[in-house]
Image 1: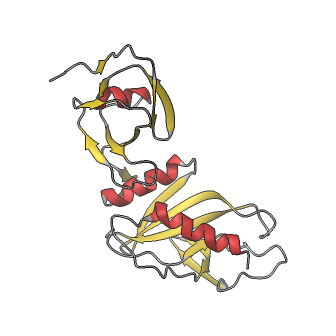
Image 2: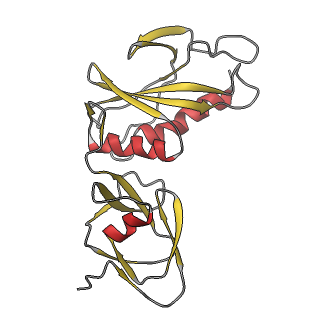
Image 3: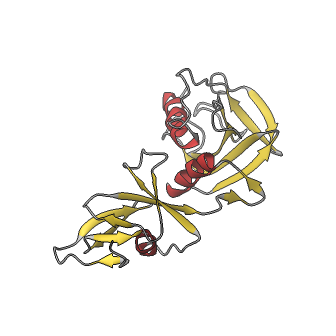
Length: 213
């Protein structure tokens, strides 16, 4: 068994990706610890080999585990505890939230009545369809990741570009200590735990915004 953290190959560099960042490495194999070190992550982070950025689970890699390096491999590093402030949530939800953060968004997380609130700041809106170019976006996910998500919420002042209230969005609610405009836009496909989560739900939200009605 190879124990070196990085075994040099002398074959030229190969591009690999860690949390969407590209790194060129000249190695036949690397340990999990060495791969994390590329991005400055230490032993307080876990690392996973994923099948592209759409993979929401991945295969866990031990810190001393040797990984054969091939061009185009994707890895994800996540905090080992994966708690958010005082909110301890299921690792699957935590992983999905970290992926949203990996897109460059500021994200706040809190718990209310067994529901995890995920607040995404400065979420971009389609140009010319609303009275703003961005909004806060609230997603609510059951603390049990097997539960389905439904609807979403925005800044209460969000309206269409012509000043009208968006369809099925006339309700203003107070959730997680703040006011929100509720978009009663329902997820009609079968929710599949292990595949569907707050990160994949963003495509559903973006589709609603793109309609601009």
